Image (tube, rainbow, N blue to C red; front, side, top):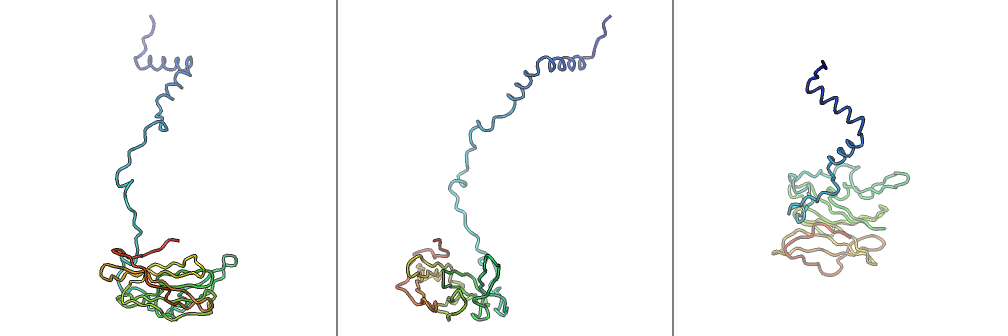
Length: 206
């Protein structure tokens, strides 16, 4: 009498025999069972992914007023760094301008900085300096609040400096235009301000 194998054992023996006899068959089955990701249709993007606007968070807008340091740190300010030797030199100390540097822009020879004081309004002012540290100008523009934002030196010859101002003048905002003295980097007005209706210029891109 032949022994009767349990059902599970019979199926397992059959599977082992099929693997030995037809290994390619199971490879084909395994390949067919894998999802072909590259051939599947792309997922439909949501409307906010296609049409959404990404805003840059400006930390100053989410900070309590009056949190700028009081400009008593002698090591704080604007400095130049030699990328080869990594030597650095302060060309404009915060102690010399009476406030903290909120933004800075420079070209080959001249730099400009928006300085904010330590009051609860963080009043801003505009100063200029020579990048070699030889000259520092007095403030040529001041606002009672944190209003000066955005600096850009143009590629013109000679270059002009554009300064954004968030002061609301009856629904109109202005961009101030300055030119710099080639020797001292002192700023002077260069024509009328540029009007920006409804929205201030908070940043520039060259």
